[in-house]
Amino acid sequence: MVYCVGFLCIIKKIKEVRISFMRMVDIIEKKRDGHALNKEEIAWVISEYTNNNIPDYQMSALLMAIYFVDMTDEEITHLTLAMAHSGEVMDLSSVAGTKVDKHSTGGVGDTTTLILAPLVASVGVPVAKMSGRGLGYTGGTLDKLEAIPGFKIEVTDTEFVEMVNESKVAVIGQSGDLAPADKKLYALRDVTGTVSSIPLIASSIMSKKIAAGADAIVLDVTTGDGAFMKNLTDARRLAHMMVRIGALANRQTMAVISDMSQPLGEAIGNSLEVVEAIETLQGNGPADLTEMCMVLGSQMVVLAKKAESLEEARALLSGALASGKALEKFREMIRNQGGDDSVVDHPEVLLTARYEVTLPAKQSGIIQKMVANDLGIAAMMLGAGRKTKEDAIDYAVGIKLHKKVGDAVQEGDTLLTIYSNQQDIKDVIERIEQSITIGKSGEEPVLIHEMITE
Ligand code: URA
Ligand code: CA
Image (cartoon, rainbow, N blue to C red; front, side, top):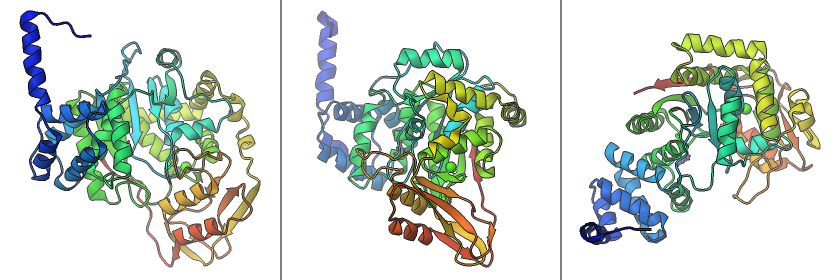
């Protein structure tokens, strides 16, 4: 509803006339010719596109111009904030304490959220987390959680806030109206060859994080074959950009650049990753996954001011793993969200795949490569992921690695186990075999490349 009386009405009319004078074609040409768009132009584009007043063909042209011309820091910030405010912005002010969110730019076998959310909550940091689903070769936290029988990822805003206030933790699906501009833009980018633009990725991720309402944000920017950012230079630029946007939006933000050339941990696939999360919360997880959780978790604890230094934070988290407090928090989170918490004591009940096939090493040597995206694609072919948004997921299937990059193997050693519900998996095995390189020598893999703060 619009109230306008006399003089105010005239001012409003003048404004409307001025705004309606903006033309999308002028904005496309301005960007195409290498100029920076101003705040009003960006706000107008986002608002008009979200309201279906700009057709996809014009928006596609602008996205492609942005892809080639790039954007200044000011433009990216205006774009992010316009997208963040294109729909509902979560109000978490009724949750006590500094709310910390964590976001990964995507990977294969990335089980960290399942572990981090209860781990960090168990030392008193409120974790109000909205997660996403997997698409293509990358897995999604929501799909993994739904591998737990009964687990509910759709809750009302009120239930969400209540859970976080009472238990310090809830991991749910993104609410329908959060950053609708991003939803439309992402779908368009997906089919116009404009996904891999750093300003567009930065604004897409940060708009959702800002709309989700956390006070502080820890970003895990992955790099390598299994990540959006294939090299360290691009990962660094994306990380710096997102940290700067976070600061300008008044959210304490830091980024960790981590390696995603091989999968994280040993499990790839939904139920397998739930089992892996439980083992890690019991203190028996894979070394790289455990370390990743300690690094990201310590940053979250410090941002939430529950510890003064990263060392102190790490000690708190190690204590919570050793005492079983973190595992108990996971049990509580499952119960709160309607899931069957007996899986915590009997995770093996989730592993129901009909066939288990092991893959032996074809030669002796050191493992030089286990290419993350190929293994992610292999898991997807088994049914662990979606080719299109509508595909159903088979929770039970996936791959469990017994060896990782840097390990020495003898010919015939078991490299991995494939969990399948199909008998004929020739194509999958072929894909997996392509992804693994064994050579005479090898280097220790790097887990964390850099930490980036303001
Ligand atoms: N993840 C997002 O949410 N958006 C992107 O553009 C890329 C990764
Ligand atoms: Ca994993």
